[in-house]
Length: 85
Image (cartoon, rainbow, N blue to C red; front, side):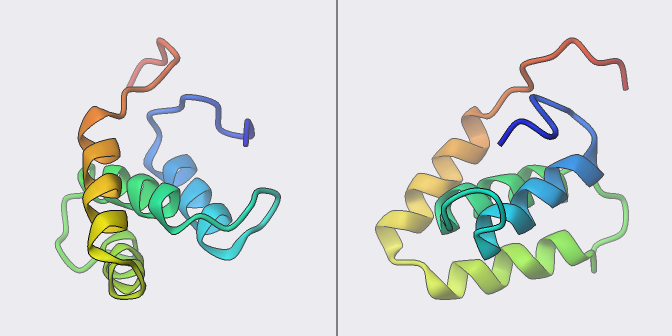
């Protein structure tokens, strides 16, 4: 999905999470969805954010190995653009 590219913007990351979670324009993939929600959630100020809720809902649907892979991908994720914050 290239609508957001390698964006650092939280809103774009959340949209990618929704797309992968619901299979909108991309194959449904909970691991990828979790990754994007987790990266987006790391960029928030308030703790009860929608990204965190969606991430946690996905975690409940995933196997332990999927969750471990999603967490690894979240840690390793880097934006591909040089977009300024």
